[in-house]
Length: 295
Image (tube, rainbow, N blue to C red):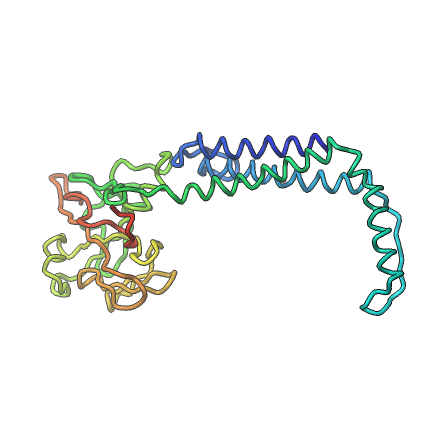
């Protein structure tokens, strides 16, 4: 039992060490889950082991050292009589004596140590809230000359690949799902393309930044950052499934319904010499929700 409590303390120390040492953007492959965050996996395992060992040690203590004699009492009124109160106190002292809580100092102190150390896990997790992202949310993986890659086929997109009324998702050239920072980068760079008839585009800037009616907007909702994936062909509206924020892709991606605070950022695109769609730079404004930490 003391061994279990000691292992629990080691697991808590491992939790703290993992939090301090493992980069937040490092991914590892875990069979059969796949590629996951190394930090999240390690924190979950160490904290789970620490909690399990405390519980297992307490249960083992109760089952092996404490008495398992059943005590049966008759029902009585809610207000206890002096005799009952005296019996309860006597039973408590008897149970304390049988548990050897006072005599078995190693088990007792190791359990107290494990319970005392465990809250440090929460302290370190709360410490992560103090790290502001600075200005890194202003930049995405998009840059001038990067081709638009279809996320489903991993092939560069041509204008003829996108039909009127269709919704296509794209990512920047050079990104791969097995990259350790893929999830962080795609969370900012995810792109959706829709082909509209040029006469249906109401916003002049949107028309100037399009190619034959193909417009490219950030896929990240400007409310809380959910991925947008619902498209209404007749109205040219896209709908966020999380909180129903609705954006008009024929009018600069402006908000027409819901809690989102501002329009979807548009990516300026063109056709390169090989006939593929490519970006003419990064988004003009930060993608996703608006908050003070954008810097």
